[in-house]
Structure formats: structure tokens, C-alpha cells
Image (cartoon, rainbow, N blue to C red; front, side, top):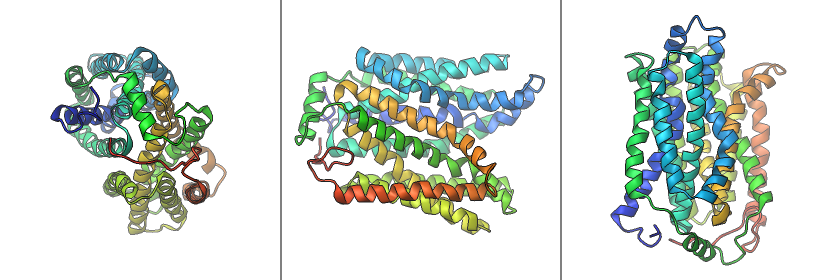
Length: 413
């Protein structure tokens, strides 16, 4: 059974949207507990270095994805997809709710480390299965929708976390039970892809070249994704500080602008499939994305009022929304079946590492600049040249060239 063969059936559609929902477990790992961190820190006030340990408990799952994504991908390529995914979802749910019962902050951090290991499996295999089930334009559509679902769920999880946090700092951890519910549906709805069928689909998708694993190309994709992960998180993390520096320290103002930025991220993800249907290719999408993000960074040093910062956030969100699915589609289409999970894990690991390093790099560079706004402005000179290079690749690449932005025949699966 393959999605390409039965894409019109209700079971295939439900299975696909289940995979999109499963991928939303990644943003849930951090966002749902974020609003209750101050309460958690107050509860463990007597623990030494609590001001560092509590934020670490939030960030450590993402770090584990960065470190273990490729390893989990190798396991999925060798052991199969579905069984490993089901075990990871059960482990994710159990580790997620465990802080409800733990009285030690260090034990909570250990549970979050294990949660991150399970998250690495979940995000890697859920994305890989979309690549296995579909090819061509349908694969592009669902990979773009995957980012749309993740970005939209982030808004929802933050609201849920805030509401449950009013009942106590432990209550948001109840949300992780949803992973156990999803695991039950996954057991009945998902199927292990057939290696031969997936390989045939890939051969049909790209008749212009042999679909072989190219480590150099994967390295290029992962390096660009690493930079993209750093760029994606700059305004997400630094927005409140930038507003404070212009005399607008209100949390409600920061929340309003962040919400508007999140909406633009969703719109950006929805735009990718439309641009590809208009005969633009991945390098065009990346050129637009890097240009939008770079321009938003370039304007930050001149932002002196809330309306200006709102405009910057809107442009940045649209660019970030375009960037992530474009990179995911580019990565997926270049991976043969035998290395698809490994390549997907490496891609997710690169993005997660970039997101983890983003605040560290900003703080380090700010120590040598005239302030945070100047640091963000300097970041523009990383993104804008990348936009130029992507645009040159769009004009210079030929259909028979596979590296790095080959044109492909896009067909409905």
C-alpha cells in the first residue's frame, strides 16, 4: 500500500494528516511549558543555579534533536519506520508527563533529555514517511503543509500552556498525553513503506539522473539549514529585547507583534506550494526567503517605534515561512530511499542546532558591537549574499544538473 497509489482514499488522507499532526509534537516539546517557567523557577528557588537549570529544561529536547537526528535516521533506515515511530511516540508521551510526578529538578531535566531523544525519532520518521508515501508535487505540498501545521500549532500550544499554567506549573505537562493518543491512531493508520515501491517512485520522479546518495550535497543543504535555523530564531527570541531598547517594554506589545509574525510564518509556508505551481523552483523560493529575512534584519537598527518593528516582524515571518519548507523539499528530493531517514535526521539536526546556537551567537556578537540592534543588522550581510547566490543558481542551473538546485519534472504522485 502506498499513498501514491491510494491518495484518493480517505484512509490515505487521514494517515497523511496524522503524520502532519505527529510532527507538531516537536514545537509542543518546548512551547507548551514555556509560559509556566517562572512558576517552576519559583517552586525550585532553593536549588542551586535554578536560574540556569529551568531554562535548560526547556531547551534540552531541541539540543538532543540536533545531536541525535542523524543517528535516529540511520536506525530508521535499518530497522524500519513504523515500529520505531510507535515506540518513540509512546516514550515521548511517558517522558512528557513524567514531570507531573517528579520532585527533583535534576530528575525533570533527565526526563527532558530522554524526551528529546524520542523527539528526534518522531520528527525524523514522520517527515521521512511523507517522503516515502508521496513523490513529485504531492510530496512538495505535504512537506510545505508540515511546516504550516507546526507553525500554527505553536500558536495554539502557547495559548494552551498559558491557560493550564494558571492552574499550576505542572499542569501543562498533561498535554503530552496527546502523543499516546496519536500513537494508537498511528498503529492502525500508518503502514511500513515498501522499499521497492519507494525506489520506483524516486526513479520515476527523476529520470534525468541516477538517484544516488551524495554526501557533499547533503552537507551543503545542512549547512544552509544551520544558518537558516540561526536566522529563524533571531527575532523569535530577541524581539522583546529589541522593543525594550526602543522604550516599549510591554509584554503585551511583544506578544502582539510575535503573534503577527507567527501568522506571516504560516502564510509563508502556504505560499511555497503556490510558487512551485507557478513554475518557480526551489532556488527562487530560497532567494525570496533569504532576501526577505535579510531585509528585515537590515532595517532593525533604524526601527524607532512599534509600527516599524511590526513591519519588520511581518517581513521576517513571511521570509522564515518560505525558507523552511523550501529547504525541506530540496533536502527530501535529493535523498534515495535507503538514506532518506538519515538525510532527514541530519536536516532536522542542523535546523535544531542552528536554533539552539542562535541566542548564543547573538549574545557573543553583541559583546563586540554597539548593541543588539546592530548585531541583528550585521546578520543581514549573511542572508543577503545567500539570496544572491540562490538567485544565480536559479538562472545558471540546467535541468540535467543535479547539484545543487537541479530542475525536476514535477508530477502528481
